[in-house]
Image 1 (tube, rainbow, N blue to C red):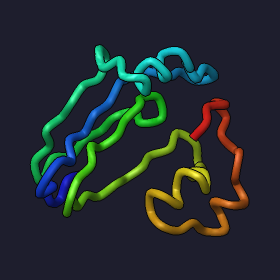
Image 2: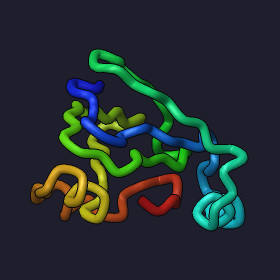
Image 3: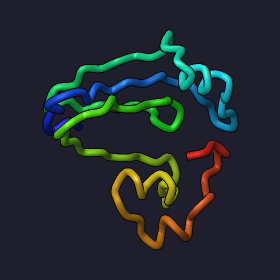
Image 4: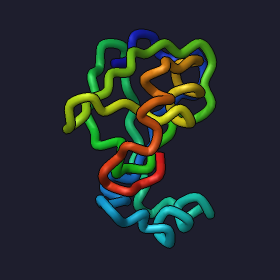
Length: 112
C-alpha cells in the first residue's frame, strides 16, 4: 500500500504471469531485461492505493524514486513459508534465524 508518493519517479512496472511454477521462463524474462517492453504494464499509484498481485510469477520493479513510503505485505499459500535471505535482506534490511533455517524450502523450484 502506498503511503506517500515519491517526489520524483516511483512508478510501478510489472509483467504479469511471466513465470509459472517449475518454469523460470528464462527467454521471456531475459527479453524484458534486455529492453522488450511490449508486455510491461505501468501503474500510477496514489497514497492509499492497495495493490494485490502475484509477485512470485510477475516480473516487477519500481522506477528510481525519491522519498517514497510504502507498506509491503506478503501472503504465502503454505503455512510457515518465509522469503529467502537473498530476497528479504535487501527488501527489509535484515533477516531472522527463521529465514536462514528455511532457506531453499520453496516447493515451486523458482528462484527468488
